[in-house]
Length: 346
Image (cartoon, rainbow, N blue to C red; front, side, top):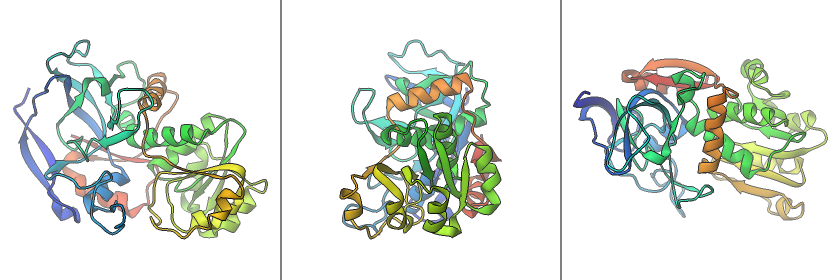
């Protein structure tokens, strides 16, 4: 095994210029850790938001910070990783070298299946934009029998994990009518696929150019985002049981009246705007639940791994880049013309 690796270091908050392509020592696994050789990594909005420091702080929405607060630099980003076990640290049994694995990127607040995430690879710990990464042995899952490619596996953890958490926290069931915002992106398309697989009727907000791809993923109806709240109301005349929202912005207050009494609005992103003006009466007078959902739990991720092993979920890969071309990959990601996931290969 090599002694050094190439990696992208995030040196501070800013534009692409704060990324540095550098030679670094391959890390040694400590007690309870596994060293994974990365075979595929994928891009997410959180990579860009972390780089730019766009998460804000309590009481200061404009502050530069990571999703859990201030970051330590330099940091190797990348929350999505598929790979092969290269070595195991002291005290690790049953994780042999050469095993094909999918890495759960979350760090959890407690040691139980339903604990929430309090950290993320690529944010609170070094991640997948490198030749190797370290992960706790309990967060490395055997996918040797999965029919998915390494690129497809790498597309799952952050986007599909986030989507799985939203579906569970929103109690999405068969026969329900659910609205998915940002439906052509990584999390949005995952929501369409996973909600449709549960038997929900999915109304997806996207652009006209991407509508066919979103319908192919399982949407029963698509709405051009330019049509706003009126277009959604026309597509769901009997009102919505739930909204799975990765966009935020002005759509939330505009569309809240379209949610039925006792419905749910689950939000896990704010790319259309993090600060909104909301009439709270539309919530409490109609018993609508507003649910914040950040990533997944261990139980959610275990279910996702089971689907990956069975091949019942298959991410759409929009583009592939060599790891060395991360800035070009992020530039394509930010143009927003793709449908699905953009994947890197070391």
